[in-house]
Length: 121
Length: 107
Image (cartoon, rainbow over all chains, first blue to last red; front, side):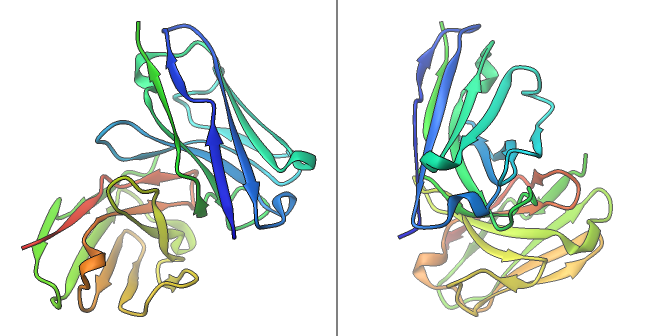
């Protein structure tokens, strides 16, 4: 069964850091680009960041550029998102999503269940 | 940034009826890189349609997509009880942006 399981969310104060993880199973992880997509409570979807199969191509939304860093470990079938200088507006459910292709085409065909990040003092 | 506007915001229909959802882009979407996702309460989104009209794996043929350029449509030919949900369009031809969503609710 194809599965993505996120972890690492929680309550954090503004300005602090958090690292999200996503464990993949049921498919050949290093064949595909991977992404983080977030959804603020009661709101729509926002692409956050994506990484190609070999980490050679990486992209970020303007809203997180310079603060968030995406990475992957193909040996561990895992995707990560290091989030620094967190702001209240980063509060959201963060989904790990598989791309349909090896390069970041940003077409998300498999999604995890999400991990909630709440930024508040 | 390409802005996607979905209409209507809410669609109230009965099971068995036809649903027509619209997605309009602020500029042309290259190569029809337009997708549709379904999201039910408490669940992750699910890919339904990509390339404007290709159904994703396992998606029933009552779901169909059409359109090009700046105007796209998702049609559900006959609503089943499990189809009542929020639907998002997404363009992935120039970075990625999502529309605000259309909620299909039971009338």
